[in-house]
Length: 222
Image (tube, rainbow, N blue to C red; front, side, top):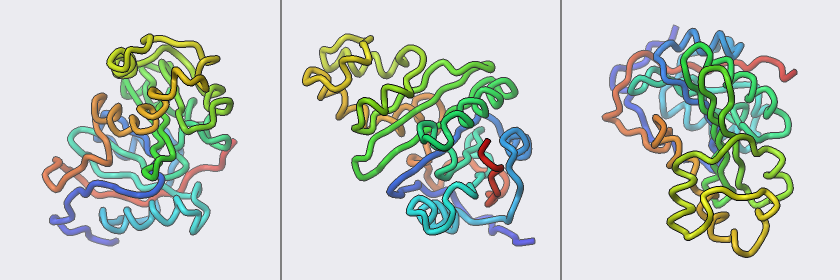
């Protein structure tokens, strides 16, 4: 068994495409069991960054593995393309799994963030139900298909700051009046994640850590 050094501090993750699940618990084993993940090996944060970057570029079967972090400030992060809440292959599975996680832990979130201007997506589940799913990636017709629930408080406040209605119809998504919101929405996933709990983009060596990160195998997509 690989022993991870105690000076393996958390690092902010900066990859071209970042997808993750966040659960407010330190129960790494329980999160893995709920998601159907099987352990592969222990990895450092630096190794995890390389794996996530490689899988995002489809260097391997990008949906076949994820990084399951140690407890970070009371949260467990699961990171990899498989976690994308608005991917055609995984969206239904993420909807179900986040609902299952929120039944057990009260809340679960899934995110996508394209750091090269490729957009954002978020899925928020509470107490067994998905309360919000939203996608803003520059493909209005496709993004609209994924929308569920009512806008989050942060979405509403940002739209008010832009002098836009805090609620809106999906039919206006591609309109000129919505261009400012589209630009804002493209960048919001890390901000929403941080506001609701924790973002992998905001990790620092000072982030409280307990346990060891694991590389894990994902279950077959149903």
